[in-house]
Length: 109
Image 1 (cartoon, one colour):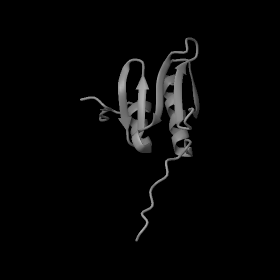
Image 2: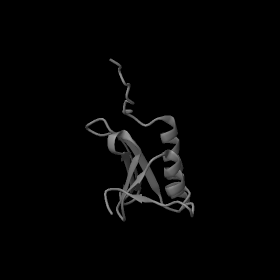
Image 3: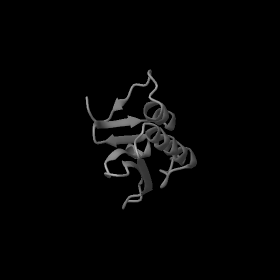
C-alpha cells in the first residue's frame, strides 16, 4: 500500500499573492481611482481580496481562490467572473493590461 500525498489548500494568502494585490491596488490608484482594499478570511476560513472605491464603497474587484484551491476567481460589478491560474496571470491581466492577455471566463461558454 502506498500513500499519495495531496497539496493542502492554504488558508490565507502567501507573500507572493499579497504582493500581487498591492500591485493591483497601485494600478487602480494610478488610474485616478481613489481605492482602498481589504483582505481577510470568510466565515469558512477562505481568503479573499476586495478592492473598492473609497468614497462610494463600489467594489472594483473581488478575488477568491478558485475551485479546489487552484487559481483565482476574479469578480467585479461590470465583468463576468474570470479565472486566472497564477499570480503572473493576475498581474498581466489586471495590473498591467498587457495586450496579449486573454481573460478566461469561468463557468460560462
